Image (tube, rainbow over all chains, first blue to last red; front, side, top):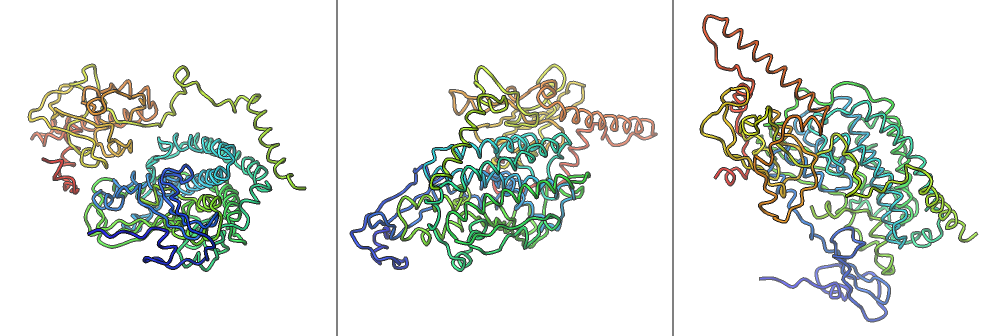
Length: 391
Length: 219
């Protein structure tokens, strides 16, 4: 027997399982379904909105259009076989996903990557962060109606970094580079020189981007004071990443867990003050600068040596029974993989903690009382990838 | 002053607009079918089978050990082992694949088959213009379509191919030395002369990797 789910109008009128509306409506309510094929949803995502004139009274997010059975597939796959699938979670930052998965399997098997591999991982993860933050800011400005110019500036830089990824890993986006106990191939000296050249050009890009956008009156008028997320609510909802830091909570897993070799680098954690869309935008721009400084330090200090633990096994890998949770500070927030092993060749349980999905659950609270036109701006400031939300 | 930020931003846009006409590194558009960029050396898309010598069927390095079939994450490789053995291009008796198909509409270019292959028999191609009007048969490549000579491998991934050749030559020399030592000894030792056979013995000694799909692919 199927039960009819309450529509967003029913919910707005106080029916159904949802909590009652927090804003009083003055006129008659109108239901608008935004998505799943709206260009600003970054994929297929639907928001059912109950409107009072222009004001949002209630918002019901609908996920799952892109569900690909990732966790169940991971349980049927060998440990190595899941690695290329993690690329497809958050397809903008595939290398951070690789790292999170490799870290949790390494915890499970009690392995550790050699020194050079750790440095390579930091370099690649920070390059990924630059790519992600630059393009997410570009997308945010595009949602404001800037028809792509800032996005193209971000993509110009992204192109250089993706070329680096391709020459090291063989693929631009689906890198499949990290392994349990190291990295797949070593980086050549020529690759490191090329990376140094690209990193040397990044501060100029960052300056240009900030001159271009930060003091723009339209950006300020549209972004400041909307989509407020109070720090208490952010912590209670499990929000992580730039979203949480823009709400003024000092929580960066690179500082807290110090996984890998992040304890060796000096960097600051930018924090927001007003908890609005503009703060999230600024926190991302400032994080690009901090990433550049980490990259400079890592490229200066990278030692020579092997990139793969000689005891690591690629084929027929069977970690002993147990469980492990490995997490990294992915560009979008805390990305964790929880694995339970029963001693077999494939995990008994394979669970992903995706930052995009958990950051998105708070969307309604940020949108209530705002204008409909600002909903997509708030949505863009969450910075999600639907591949990771629906998995 | 209101609008100052907008003017500053527009100055950046103007600089970029003007710059796109004068500096050569900003002229990045390539008129694709007429002009092509040379692919980056490490780039990969779909797998192919390497063969040595002149005859593709005799020279295939693949000995149908089926490791890549088992490890392939999307299960896009189909192999049938031969019942008999036949000489490869140097005249050694080998099991060979009577059927080796890769469904490249399923393949996700992860290169795990390349990593797990103990015989350096499967490598990644850089050929990307593969569109076809037959979406089922046209994208299911059989072993003849997959077989490409070692010289081709050298042209697309020169550094990697040179390393692989050196490794294979080293293994062959080691096996020959072992065979000579065995022949010199009074009693002939086990026939582990062929490096491929030796590696295969190791592969068979390892416990088979069970996956949930094994029941389906085995039938």
